Image 1 (tube, rainbow, N blue to C red):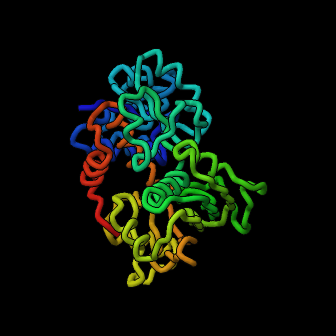
Image 2 (image 1 turned 90 degrees about the vertical axis):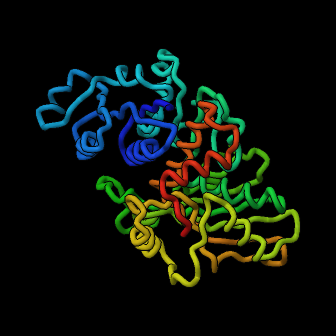
Length: 340
């Protein structure tokens, strides 16, 4: 069994912990928090050993009924690999600690590519992650873009991508972010950082991205346009999407035209936390104009799509299987990943 520590038990960390716990070849050896919280209680309820950043604060946790197993260094002693799910910018500071304990480590997209020197997407470069010590799983938006761009590029060639990210203002549980009544250009300048981030995984792709933030909490929405290197039909593109294990079609027959309806659909499907691990591409939006001009809308669940990528990254780094499709299948099956 691969022993996994999760440093940071927040939006992503708690989902990674549950996903690891579901895998047949992995186990959670610990999760960490910096202060008492509802998530710390949940960690105890789940049976995950809870470690804290500052052991001097142990009484602060235990006085409110939260059991503490030790400090973060104690947690790392039990692990083969650590998933750093701390806030962006914090994870880089932890690298020295991971090196001290000779641990393999995974960072999230909030850190720069340089933290690991390798950015990961299981659909694109799984084999290149085999046996690596350090890996960065790219952000939710970059994950969604990489999946569809790479899949289409493998069949038709992609000569240029233009994509606009309409981003959520906050996660559903967040109360300190906005906007409440605004559309915020983020950034005002063009391109946004998402295109260069895609190129850390797919360096040959010519891509320009734009981004804005809107007052919603569930999902980003991408407007994607690709110039193709060969003639394609809409049916061929739909077939690529249908066959991909990490992309799903939001069918016309569902009547879903919004992220709110998509969230309700995921809830009705019985998905834990209404999570959507796949890129959700709206079937009616997929259009090929003039044989080589491809358009689509895709929704990206910002809390969930990188979770499965972390699991595959663990398996690749620990040489669990050399086959990306096998790893994806194991991960998906363990989570009860059923098609949209």
